[in-house]
Image (cartoon, rainbow, N blue to C red; front, side, top):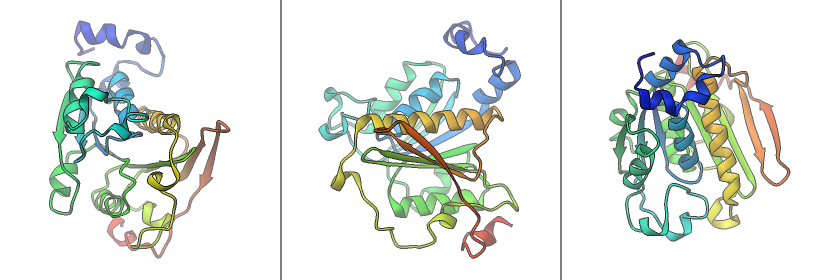
Length: 251
C-alpha cells in the first residue's frame, strides 16, 4: 500500500475492516472532496473525512469565526474569534494527517469563482444553507456530472441527500424544490439550533461520502431526515421532476 508508516499507524484500526482493503483505501485517498461551508455541519464532516482517509480537500467559506459559532462549529475556539474560518480549519485538520492536501478558498462562492472552485472535485458537499448558493452549486454539479451532497440543519432536525449526477439519470435539488425563490422555511437565526444536531448531520454527511466512495451506499434517491431529539432517522424516497429546469443539462 502506497502510504507512509505514519499513515499506516493512523488508519491501522480502520484497515482491519474487510471493506477497507488496499484498493478501496487507495481509491478513498485519491478522491478530491470540495466542502462548501465550514459551519456546524462542515466542521465535523471535514474532521471525519480526513480521519477516514480522504487526503485531498478544498475548503470554501468567506466567513470569520464569531463567538456565536462555538457551540456547534467544533473546529474553532475562543482564541480563533475574528480569524478566517478556512485558515483556522486548515491548521486544525492538518493536525489529523500532516500528509493531507488542503486548499483554502476564503470567499463566498459566486458565479464568477464557481468553475475554478469546483471543477477538480470528485464530489462536492454543500452545507451553506443559503438558497442562492445551493442553486448555483446544484446546477454546476448537474451540468458537470459531479456527485453532490446537499445538507442542512435547523433546531433538532437535519437533512442529507446525495445526488449522483450521472449522465442520463437526472435527480437534483431543483427536482425537490422547483423554484428560484427561497422556500419559506425556518432558519437557525430565527428558531435556533442544537449543536449536537449539526454534529449528527455532519457525521451523516461524512459517512455518506465514505459509503459512496466504497460502493456501499444504498440510499440513492432518498432524503435522509435526522431528528436529534428522538434519535430517529427516516429515509424519504424522492423522484425526478420531468419538468425540472436542470434536466435538459443532464441528458
